[in-house]
Image (cartoon, rainbow, N blue to C red):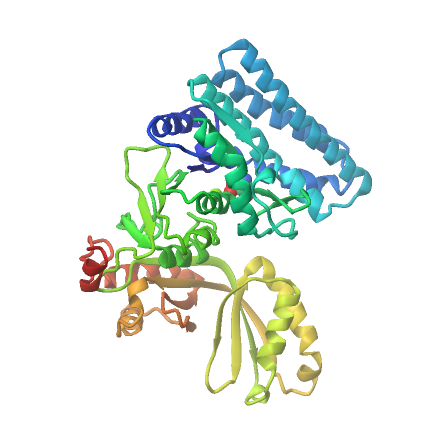
Length: 476
Ligand code: ASP
Ligand code: MG
């Protein structure tokens, strides 16, 4: 069971989460993975960055705010005086550690990826202790476990990849014995360590990924991601008020939705479970009576194929165009080399067969650096007019139509674009991955809301969908 930042956001939330753990742990063994209390990781990262400018009060302000939030929670959660002061001392030790780190960064005026990872990991180290103590208070035997002892990763300190074979070994050695003794381990999410023990992080929002990594390593029966929403919806309810909760979706659909901006899951979350087919639940820790969304290998494919619509604002379209690029070998290679050199994440690519232009979409935050890199890469071509222009349009949004069963179901793109056409929504670019799990298109930012609503309506996603014929077979 993984609890996200809002699910452990304050004493009351931690208590609610602990109740959920206790109820389950009485019946079968549970491993708990916790995020930092909400807002903490952002504050840690901001402090680390502020320290590089040599601001004098960063360390003291950070430790005061961490102390206030965590110590206050500790006092509410743990009544037993001895236990409470042991917990507070433990928290204090970690808070002092991060204060010294910030002082070190201010002196050096430099933030290395390793130091950045270490500072940002503090939130999980604190919340894991609060959760462990709370479980103890509820008479459940539990132990805080540092993920650095279990999740072995490569050395990309801020975006580390777990090394599954090693994780499996460590999980068997560290977690399995606790489970066998009836002790509930509470593992810090988000964090790992290299084979040499140097701390790494799995990337922002990475606790989901920690949970599935551990679940796969332990051959768990199921993995539950507890969060603050009821599950995955057919669309963002702020865009489409009739959006409906999906009871079951496939790994591919969930991954596609995560990638395309539905912020329920970290995009890498489902990778570790694809092979073992462990079901992953998304459930609301504030409404545990609701069942949530179950994510499985098969999902629940429906006749019309489309399951959900998602939209990504705050993206920019960069177009490299000109007659000169027609038939010239290597333009695409040069383009993507330039994009990769600034580590921009490309969300969508489209090239028309006339080859008059290539367009790609990146997050708007990455656009200026990407544009600069492209202009440098094509500097000579721009002079000789082989490439006539490189332009950027920040006033756009991507809309993605997602569904596993879209694959091999003809007419989905046709219906999508006809419906948009009837509503007078102009489509700027279109892309479909050959996986066929999604059809994405680009519209003006101001048309995004209408585009999502129109497609949601066209495929009647507000209605409970009838399962596809072969899905009935799949599900026996
Ligand atoms: N605390 C980390 C973050 O905010 C990891 C997580 O919450 O999943 O990015
Ligand atoms: Mg999260």
